[in-house]
Length: 159
Image (cartoon, rainbow, N blue to C red; front, top):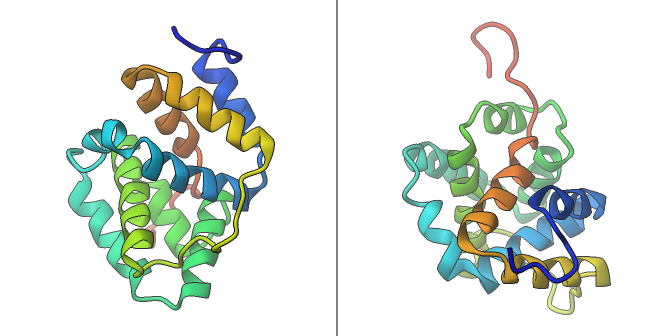
């Protein structure tokens, strides 16, 4: 492994989880925009990318404030319809969903990052560490980071 300060993907995930929810969301956007060329092939090629696209399209129809709230609810594992639907997705489909959100942010269909936003030092350092990881470790880190987000599906027919 070529990590400089972080020795394992698990350590990187622990640092990610210490970030505030809004900083976690920003970090995911930075990952997809800064190192997207190496990470994104795994996301859109996922078997569930069509499912992720459908969930993304539903989020895209919301106001920017509601879009941000959906992302916060998913990251906080709050039990909402969107969060439960996200929680039922496969790990690769979850990666695809965040990839679509990052693309939507760049296209202006999803609430953009505030113009003057700066990741806190811990997030910036983590981003550098993730950039230094090999491809498989980057994917493992991202998958592990977004895997536990979302709420479990509800019992019965409702998501």
